[in-house]
Picture 1 (tube, rainbow, N blue to C red):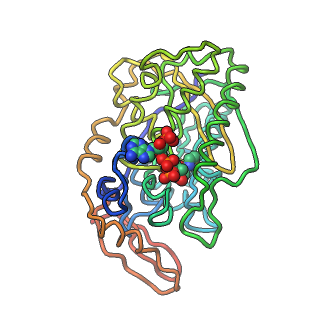
Picture 2: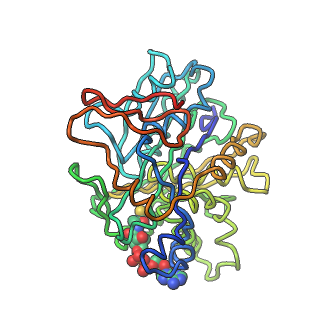
Amino acid sequence: MKVGIDQLSFYTPRYFLPLEVLARQRGVDYAKFAVGLGQEQMGVTPPDEDIVTLAANAAEPLVRDGGAGIDLLLFATESGIDQSKAAGLFVHGLMGLPAECRVAEIKEACYGGTVALQMAAAMVMRRPASRALVIASDIARYDLASPGEPTQGCGAVAMLVTANPRILALDPEVGLHAEDVMDFWRPNYRDEALVDGKYSTRLYLGTVEKAFARYAQASGRSIDDLARCCYHLPFTNIARKAHERLLKLRGRAEIGPGEVDAAVVEALGYNRRTGNSYCASLYQSLACLLDQCEDDLSERRVGLFSYGSGSMGEFFSGVVQPEYRQHLLREQHKRMLAERSELTYQEYEDMFQMKVPQDGWDYVFAQYRTGPFRFGGITGHKRRYERAA
Ligand code: COA
């Protein structure tokens, strides 16, 4: 039986900062961001969006039918808003999902979405009539003027996981690599992540080789069996570096001209414009590939590499389903990116500094541009979410 992604929706906030503006402000050559990192813009959350509203806004197009049959909701995030309650329960309420539903939050840095996807696929395999909603939602924040700043971003991806999926059927073979390392972490007392970026990049590239080698052994496939590859994208150029590593593993000396870009470039466009969305980043890249690839990918196999600092790596694959194009939200994604408002540097810094108050008082938040759901304020230490006016 085939199990995998039946529907795929991505959401990013209505505001962005051009990195040209950030480069000017920081006195850096813009080519470092645009060419060196492969980033052009950074998505910015207004004060009335958080991981819950990003998630609900991504999920809304998938559950307009009331979510009938959804009996699992897994919410993957690194940017948790509560030490106890799963963010998925807020989404469950906003979406009006059935009470007979298993809801939980999953964490392993940027890898959490893949754990959620694989667990959901296993559950559907066991009970083929069930449907699972998997959401990956994150806001990437580093210190102002730190090396990580130009890679910041935000976004959420929602996926319906079902039997006989209409978009991508997952292959059973995977390659895993786990290792206890400190390359990126965020202690409970900090809003901004701490990262040893160069070390993290080295670990990522070592992990992709190890995970791919195990995937290749388990599946009997080589890199040449994959029509395209999508990678976790802390910055988009890492996909080129990772893919080059995997091509070199083939043992042939030369890599053909344009061979790396041919496999990865169609999957980078969204992330270049939103920045890193941690758990959502790989799946945003998959959405971009499927939405924008001019070749028909029906019945073709796509490789996916998920990396979470700390660290976990997983290489896996799936086969794109016939007629997949009829089920994409391509136009909606295009419109959402086109209609965002551009921020000045000062507006970006003001939004960055406006943190959720921690003093225990009640607050009503001003309304900014958001999707259908917004974070309305805090009453009695409880976050209030509502439909945007
Ligand atoms: N024109 C074109 N390219 C330029 C340039 C210019 N003027 N100036 C620098 N570059 C290139 C560098 O050569 C480098 O490319 P390379 O890695 O292919 O050699 C790239 O731009 C980045 O420059 P670098 O000096 O390494 O950047 P940095 O010290 O500011 O740090 C990161 C880059 C990725 C380490 C940093 O952004 C970071 O910490 N990011 C957050 C964490 C992260 O992304 N982790 C990755 C694993 S999950």
